[in-house]
Image (cartoon, rainbow, N blue to C red; front, side, top):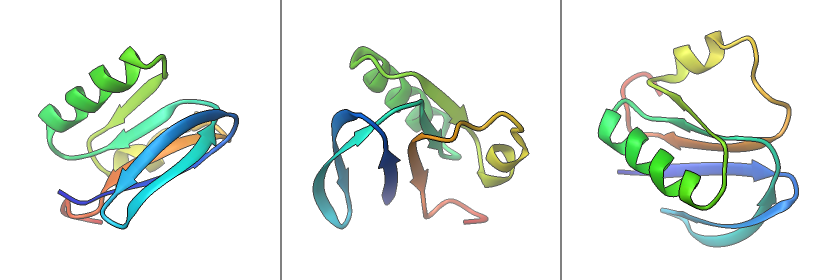
Length: 84
């Protein structure tokens, strides 16, 4: 699975992607977009254990349909799912 993450804000986190490892800071929720329910739930569990608020979406269309998206946060997306 290929995962891409885009983050901004205040809290230090480590982001590991297929492109490598980076340190960044975030505020707001971590938004997880993945068509695999097990992946979504696993990421939610792990991130909540670290104190993050997590929002889950099945696909990009569901994410874009949410009218209450935050201005800051972290976006974790499965780039290989259908429709991406």
